[in-house]
Length: 70
Image 1 (tube, rainbow, N blue to C red):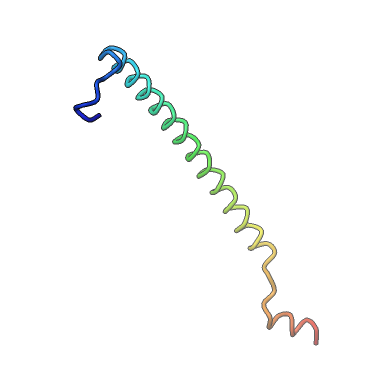
Image 2: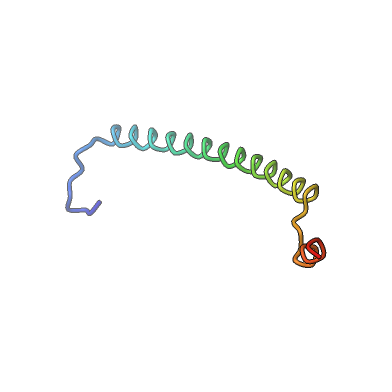
């Protein structure tokens, strides 16, 4: 705050609000970290499923399609 603007809250009120905001941010960061970890796990599972399906059912190449139609 600029020096010429008087503070309307007491230092105790400010300290309490700052601590509350700080704790809130820490909790939010922990929640987001868990979400990221869950998303990474799901992404790895999906990648494994994609690779398995592509291995078991490979897409036909244009050369294979031409041979199959002749």
